[in-house]
Image (cartoon, rainbow, N blue to C red; front, side):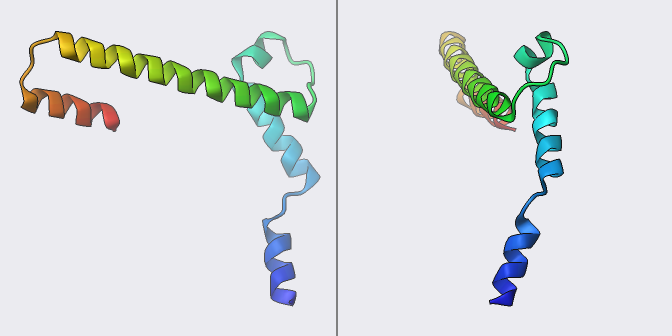
Length: 90
């Protein structure tokens, strides 16, 4: 039982560490940076982070579709196509 307690407590973050991580997220969010350095709640920052990730995923999907359309419209060999696809996956 003591082994379980140690592993559980070793994986927990302190309140200061969580606050530091939330502040780091805030810096990475474009919409939060535009509002200045005003302190936002952790909940708001986490919500904005989730929204930002969803927007980025949607943008990646749209760009992927656009690239596929462009590749279909260009006359390239299968070997060149595979090389380009492999390059883009990296």
